[in-house]
Image (cartoon, rainbow, N blue to C red):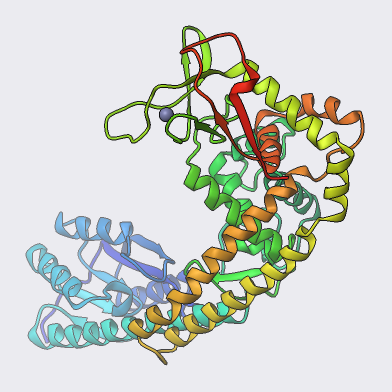
Length: 469
Ligand SMILES: [Zn+2]
């Protein structure tokens, strides 16, 4: 045995790894054990390096480890104390890099609380390699175990751990925050009634409703709140609804389905800018049948048949927007006001029957999808079978979602004082999105007959509405 001077500027390394079983050692315990060991050997620790590695999967970022390697390479550290080698290296390759750096810097003191390793001789290095190989294997097994546990949690409807509490729920995600739940109910009702995301975002800011993080509301955050399956009491796993949640729902599943169906419809319409044109998407060119677009020209707003290369539309029709909009709004109000209409809406709200039935079908199909997902997750069926079985169900789901969106159009009329002089008053107070939703509930589309190009004078005979109601 030769005499080696004990390190006088050693590094102590500790790392928290993700360990849901709670069997792992906390950083404090690791550091205490390292300090005790160093003291018993007469080592001095110059610096403690601590990484907080809590992500279960994906690339590990270990800034403290990198800093320690750097200090070792620059000769600032002459030994390393660590609780166990698996805290230091997860992969055999990392050990080789570490070993190369120590060799170059002449560092041969690496001690662990569980086993002593002297990298300065072949036996020590061999032992370190064996330990690293085992650590790598264990790490693989652990991530499979963590994945299985996450799936199990989801199937049981338990929440997944989250750093920040979701809007509407307490930090443990099991209880409703009543004031926020009221906001969510409002948001969903208004969205279903046709209000746009940007208008809802503006409303939240105006009302000074606080977010969970304290940041301002954005269309993205509003969208993610109202589209979240969580608020309907549904638990997702990898973005698929997998079970009924253990926490209470804030809105019904039927409402959730309506929100999703409507947001899909809106995506298809791809309306980004705030609406300036009341009749966007409603007008058809009387020459070629194309959908008309909005445009501003000569300082006025117009609806035009679009003309551009590659388009089938004729580009030979224009309609001054303002007078046409006034005329159509008037027509819709008159129609909504008529006794016939009031009777239709009162007696024939087939909606009330269609929606629950549709929602039920949707739910059954979704449950089947969940079952299939679970079978695939449990490896009872392969990916091919999963895909083949999924496709017909998914196409049924798409059809049902479209029908739900259609029936929810009628919800745009909810809360309107039909058959009362109040209606006109109320109309002027509604914003453009809401007005457009109401017009869309009453009129399927309007055909615009040819007229004098760019004529400012309005000729109501050019417009033929195709009524929905
Ligand atoms: Zn045309």
